[in-house]
Length: 333
Image 1: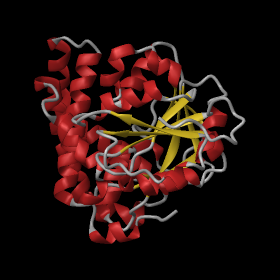
Image 2: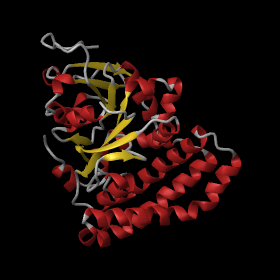
Image 3: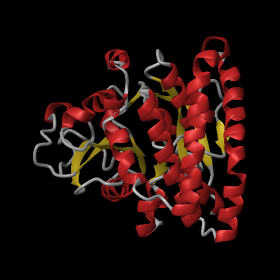
Image 4: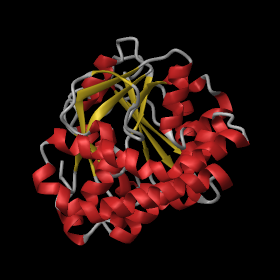
């Protein structure tokens, strides 16, 4: 564990940013460089989750620009939820945010999150932008995964926020105890529970991040299936659903593609991208909705199975699942 630099006069960071790598620092280097470009980087702690410190080879010069940084050994990664929870428990800031290795915050992102957290919000979520916009499959993934968080949208209270992009008040997460491991597997379930407990969420578009989406069709369909299988399983189990409610949702599952598709179409129109995107996206959107709905149904009936493990590679090694063009065009710092 590395303590804050000697020149720091701040007793604790304002924000702890969690990055997770399956092996070496190089996997998260670009994300950390974008965090280093934040104007309040001297108030940011970097928490690096890794199976073993051996072989990590962190860039100490780059990390030295932050309030402080630490390495958290998490063992074998077969689910993101427990790893994220372990890093949250180790963090030293009052606000924590997981920053994916394929998500690149724009300058001002951290300051906007911290400023918003001065209000009565349990969680503050950013605006999500497409970091690989040349691919129709990427845009489909973007709208399926972040339907309500694609610009334009005004700041304000929200019913949900972007999963794996949202910042939380750490104390509220710690109150979940060992249950946090499961709740962080899918943050939609966590946010529903926070609101049920009387907490409030806030959408802050001044905080913007560029997100790389899966853009290879076969892998996109697989990622949608496993994401939604885990979501359906956790939604039912953490919500305490009995079999009657599960069966009710299974019976209604054929409507899921139509309901989600309608929301996506409305958001595409509001984004001003309808003319340039809709026809290109339509085939992959129909297939993606079908795959996601099938995954959700399987999750309600048979649980998550190995969905958490299957998701890990999509989440921690995203560049394996994008086209060569997208890989070349991923934004630099």
